[in-house]
Length: 131
Image (cartoon, rainbow, N blue to C red; front, side, top):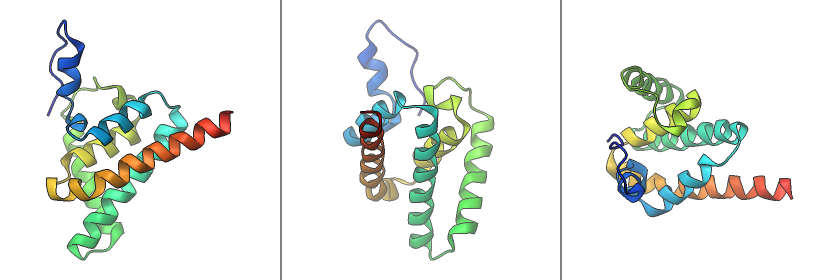
């Protein structure tokens, strides 16, 4: 799903973002937007790892070939998409978010709670390190 053009009501754009369909993921991704590039990269790798691990377990496959296949599919799709979302500026995060968005709904339901929690915990640690 793509973001609709901005209107005078910013809330209409927010409710059209694919990740806002899950309130916990929407909140976590919004927090992620404020993080540093280093945290974007770390969280992107964690998202990819979680998605790949669940795919591999569900399909009874090894993680290496699963990761290679899933990232290849995401990259081909991304070649056709404009880079107009805030997370498109980091190629790892862009791939991770596309991979998560393309994950079948039944997998999303299982992994989104883990991903949302991982994002929040990672960013909380970041705040503790700064303080």
